[in-house]
Picture 1 (cartoon, rainbow, N blue to C red):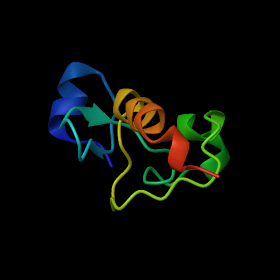
Picture 2 (cartoon, rainbow, N blue to C red):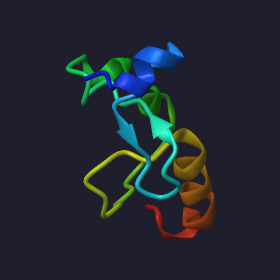
Picture 3 (cartoon, rainbow, N blue to C red):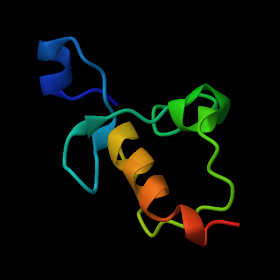
Length: 72
């Protein structure tokens, strides 16, 4: 899925981050293999996040840091 804005700016993104609103990319949402998504490179262990959409990398890393004591 490519929006007009992403076509004009030559940047590809699939949605806006539900936390900060910045454009972000999810390989799964783009119909690609989940293993190609950037988030699979992050050691997320058992992270439970109540969002239907993926966060951007900055927000996800901040969330992990802020909640690291909660993860098993």
